[in-house]
Length: 289
Image 1 (cartoon, helix red, strand yellow):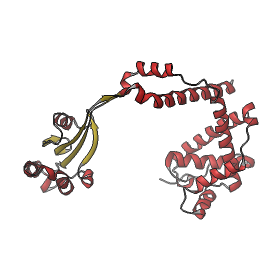
Image 2: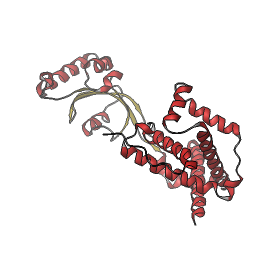
Image 3: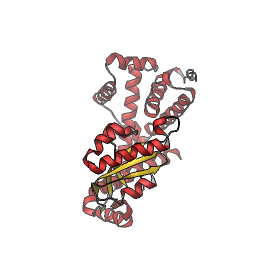
Image 4: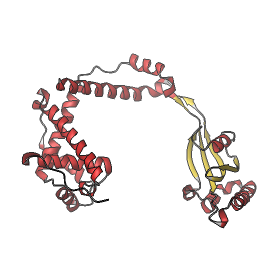
């Protein structure tokens, strides 16, 4: 697919700011520079850039926006944080150049971002603090959020079935996994090493480690076998659509209910952030009327 051609720029006095917003959107959405985007990606980034600029204009033209003040040192710090993402200063400057952004555009754009954030923070600072009663009510009304499921640390060994390869026909795959099962019956402590040398899953590099699985995460056949095991037990061979498996239940972390005291501060933070965002959204909607 061909790269997209440059989009039409806005009037001269706004083109640098527009270019910065496209650069920011391209990096945030795709992790690319604007010149690396395909036509459809550039269209998406441009739309995001236009939305961001319109929202900034709306907020910064408000009474609060006209009163806000951002010191030069704050803009300097913001530039330094962006520069630190690049290998060196030349790479940073080259990125700006390729995106059509000069440093004065960058300073202007970052001043606007900081001012935008400052205004929204000012708006949300007027919110009433979340009370203990509200935290307790949320906890009581949302019990499922505070049930921590049982987790099982699981390793597996996979032998795939593929008739295009002699060693992976169904007959040969079953023989290979059966040989592994017989070896593990004698030496169960060798599971990770067997996974590293025999498994055809990318997890072989980590000794077959699949991670901490709640019930219902794995293939149904593996899930049923895993949650019937005791800690340290091995099961298999087990057949799934992926092939033949051996599994090890390495550790069991029992399920638990998170207490109100354990959850209180995270709940306070969550409810506070929710309230602040709602206040900001309502204030912005009010600007549009």
